[in-house]
Image (cartoon, rainbow, N blue to C red):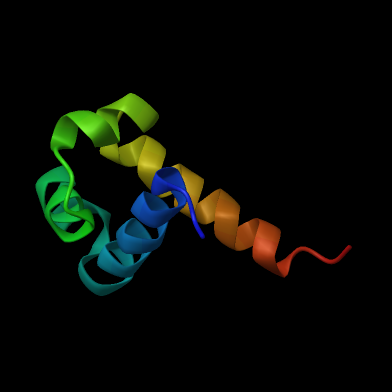
Length: 65
């Protein structure tokens, strides 16, 4: 079972891939995760912080061990 932070990142990754950073909103991410914007701000300071966390997660996935 994944945690809420991971779920936020997964949904955000899909939104960023489809719409890009500029057109993706915190509201859209929150709506799809079915949480309030306040919950997202509990985990992340801004949309850009979410974006960087998504990029970092993707980099970890392809980094050789």
